[in-house]
Length: 272
Image 1: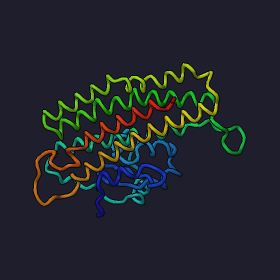
Image 2: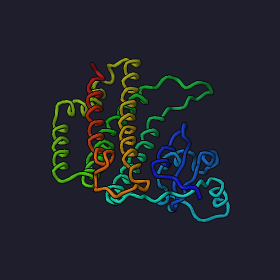
Image 3: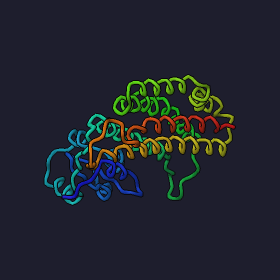
Image 4: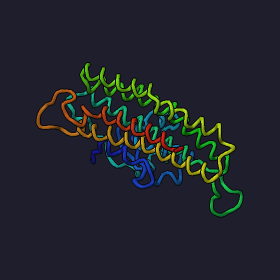
């Protein structure tokens, strides 16, 4: 039986890499199933790259047709984590799952387009679509980013850093969240909505595209950093190590916070 790492599955959640998911520790490639899925492709896309067991059990019941479809899509099994530091490995795996879930949801939000009434190419975004794009940007900061910082970053800090290092990280995070660039970035989407009627279509469309690019960039950077650290926990090592001794694991929180700082600075330059 072929074995796959969690980080390998997490990479397969887009058109370029295909769509994989995990059911009961078994890995499936559902790229082809999307064409015949009764619920449409979107639900499979939202679960791609992560464990979909709980959602699958809520909706599906055993059937010969379903079993046959899954049998054709089966790739192998998920490899058990081999890290001596189980706490760090579990925190990284949970963080990666949440990040992939957010990445999938954000792509679904960004893919929203009003369909034309007649066949032909999609028109330029309507004012309603552009307003919805700004609201998505605001929700990303208020919900996605806040959860990443309050839940994932703090859980990873507790699992990979010493108490002193945790205090230092929390101090840096508090300083960031009380800074002027942070306040400006958080106010940015609401300022756009306030000025919405006075902004020309082309300028508004460019601004929304920039917001979508930056939001997607931040989630991708977090995914890259967490995946890199988790890979250190996925394969056996020649000798045990102390928690946080591996640079990729011990340094993951610093990488994540740096990405947030970069994101905040970039958002602050959008209207300049």
